[in-house]
Length: 544
Image 1 (cartoon, one colour):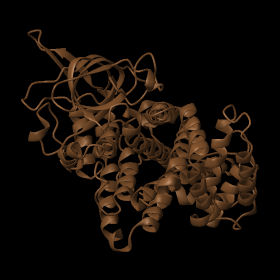
Image 2 (cartoon, one colour):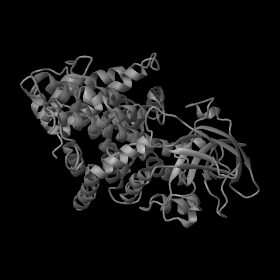
Image 3 (cartoon, helix red, strand yellow):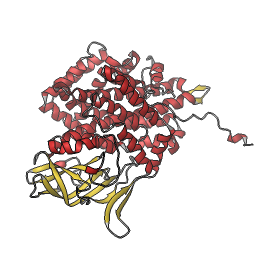
């Protein structure tokens, strides 16, 4: 008989065996709101199947093991031959295979493709976030490749296929392929125009050899990469296949893998090119404009990834508080804990609502929506990704000491959260990109203001915030030094306008009172006590 001191009581059951999609009211409602009527039933069925898989014990175990056993670099074989391979845990392949099979690299050519893919990306990220990096880059490579119709015709069917085939083989013989990207070099970082990798033209049209290095190259076992290098005509975009058509391996020397804070399941490496064969994508000297379509698409995935981390953090916190008792009652019913949970839930709902709105703009593909995306994507990337880390910290604290131990899964969410703010341009890069669009593309500002204006008159705090934003936009003196402040206001006004239009009244009221009305402290859990916080928390509770 066990000693009485070993009796386990008041411990929370694991959040497992549930449908991640159906348990997320905000996401489910967004899919219903934005879906074409004839496609909604099929989309729901896809996402329900993926949601059940994401919430299963099996997928959670895959994610934990893939992070506990990070990839291993093998530069040489036993005989001393250079092979430059990365070995991944089998569960990494399970995760990646399910992501590809679920269409998470297939958005550009099917109806409601971006909406379906964005919702699926948000759902499946909650099983494990690291493997979504190659998924994101594969999806995002398509618009860049379309700068060269011949390359797009060759590669796009492989990148959008629902087939995952790992292993280094000629891509022509594989049912599906994955792509990576290499822009950053050690001397420049985000300043890619200082890249020193050289591209020497060959006799064959569009063919070059590259010499140089890339400081960050994510998912180096992908089948191909889009990279930037200096050609005779200036900075240019190139496609570097991992294996050449004749079956020989391209020169792609992996110097080391990065030892990262989070994202442990995914390999990020330093790569040397030395006579590496490449195909030009787009015109010489047009490297940044060519690859910018890929960058914009991956920036949206940063927003989706942060929204997913927020949602999983909030789900875990609310689930814990629902089952944990303290001081004579359930934690979720304690006024102060309810305030914290409601505040976290507001942040999560605003992020998800904005992310799905951006995805639908890609599907619409009109001049107005493209102009809207030009401002809305860097604005959302700046703000949503920055909110992820403080939210993860606060959600972890809701679990107390239990949240601080690895078995809870909360430390992994916390370590992953800063990545999306850094990847594809950190905060200052996004803020400066917003300023660039404001100064050079008036249609982008018009589209942005039309979007937020659709909610005018519905809430006096939102109306006042829009008016203040217009005043801020009219004064461009010293604009760079206050760019972060401006972009933050733009993001909050945009989120507030969407919630006023689409969220339940108690959610919109709480968001406008705190984020726009100024009745909010410097930490989560400082919402006005007069709000309907219980309804906000209940809306965020995952139903197992």
